[in-house]
Amino acid sequence: MTYGLMTAAAIVLGYIEAQIPYFFTVPGVKLGLANSVAVFALYRLSAAGAAAVSAVRVLAAGLLFTSPFTMLFSAAGAAVSLCVMILLKKSGRFSPVGVSAAGGAAHNLGQIAVAALVMESGGVYWFFPVLCLSGVAAGVIIGIIAGMLVKRIKIAQI
Amino acid sequence: MKKRRNDVILILCILAAAALLWCAFALFSGDGAYVQVTVNGEEYGQYSLYEDRTVQIAAGTGENTLRIEDGRAYMETADCPDLLCVRQGGIEKSGESIVCLPHRVVVTVYGGEESSGDAVSR
Image (tube, rainbow over all chains, first blue to last red; front, top):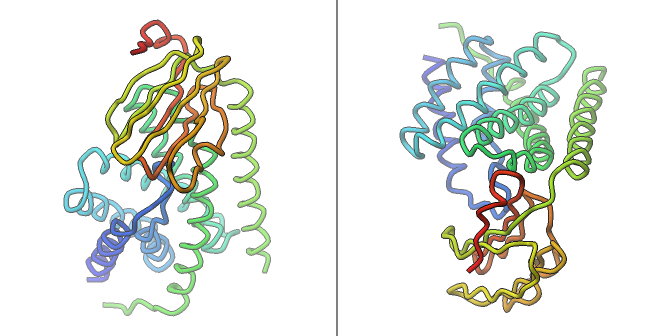
């Protein structure tokens, strides 16, 4: 039940995010609200739990709100981001803020890599430093939110 | 507290890496060969960077004047309210772009080996 609830929350957050207009000229600069659930799941469930919630979220949100093409981008981003976050969390040296910040940058790195492959152009790498910056910024915000959630919400054993 | 310090170090490292990459790109990325102009996501035209010219871009909501000179492209004038595109200055490296949001005009430099041959001007 916990998994379903968290996945649902992530999908709704993804939907809310899709309603926010962004005026940045670089594609891919966004907050990534749904990732707060991934970070939360990582701390409150397990690495596998976070991966499962993210996978279902990407699939469902992709089918519901965006195109398969966009889904490919978010899947790559989520996968790379999760790997990095799992490793950093395991190291035990960082708080959710640091983990999430690195995850945000990794998310954008994954997306850029897919974009470069799809468009067969190295030109998109120009976006990477900018996306790295925005990924870290968004990751810090998301990490703070997730940190608060982790502190306040305990998962009851069912 | 120790974790917070580690967080800061981690974030600074990522930012430093991004800054380094940016410098590397700026140093090594190739000069552009042509610019592509799109209005509202649709292609408006392609213009070689090798010949100087002035391009009037008639977007539905206004007009921009693009000037190409000495391998650089810049927005000379525009009748949009913010004039961000004019203030942005010139672009010349492949991948760089000028965006005029009010008119939905995007000018992107393309370059490099594979596409320089078929840069079309019209």
